[in-house]
Image (cartoon, rainbow, N blue to C red; front, side, top):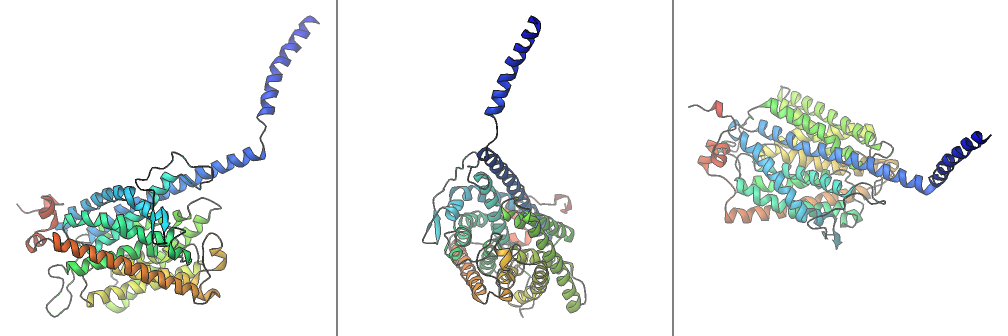
Length: 455
């Protein structure tokens, strides 16, 4: 009996602490909700970080696209300046760019605060995701807009101009437009302008800077004849160009789907679905229209068509039904072909077709939400009214048009003024001799393809 009592006492001593701990650790509604909330923050943070990496990887796509679309003598320069300007853009965006977008709004025009941004180490309980990740994500978008602008400088701009204009563009031009539309207190945001992932903020802004540059730099040597007719200056590697497009296409899923800023109920998959439909439709439309009009299925037009479809669906990917995504892509593919021809007739030398792919398609994409946005999809996290074809009348379409006009005009005028001042002070363009030799040698002292140089 004594031995049994000892065993029972020992068992109770062991059991009571465990029971006490179990009672102490019993979950409450509050603790469960807190755990679920933190798990959601973690998942959202992971998704946005992955999306940011995809968008940053688009820089590789721009390197391949621009390098392949220009001549061999400028290949190293094109690749190198992309890395240099991305690095500089990072520092400028950290110092002032991010603050001008997301600081406290000053009259709806620009943000003030968050300069030299220093985020908390982790997300707070009421945040959607970690603030440091938001900075990386927003930086990636700003860098894409800058890469678009460089299309207007290609094969003739001085390296020093890339340095100065990066500071102006990332420090002021891009942040102002982004603040207007993406800061809740921005004046266009107050009018409920719809631009889910940046057809206006990113693409039109970059294209307008490219337009200012190409006007002031003037055409490349040999592009136009005395009678105004254009000569075709072929890029040196169409495979590079194609690889650039597919890398950009791949990165666009971070661009558009990542702009959901969270995992939620998987809505990012719907955004990706619409993005793919529009890109595919635009590539097919561009190839077919070139085949019909030119008698040949032009690969360059097809590639630009795919990009135009991606640009166009960027504003509306979360707001439209699949059939509308296809229509948006088809129109973008046709639009890019005819606008490429138009700009050439106007004497504008746009080596990477930034004005057609990002400018015209950006305008169309922004306006398309005013036509096709549905009330149900806007309710998932958008703002504003349904499109014209869904009973919303012309009001939202008018807001979209106002946003295109004001944002595009601001980006063009400020870019033009900044570049004109640079032109007066140090000049924009390399000398004729340097342009003929190529920017690899004249700006960097080495060829991108040294084994191909005749000795």
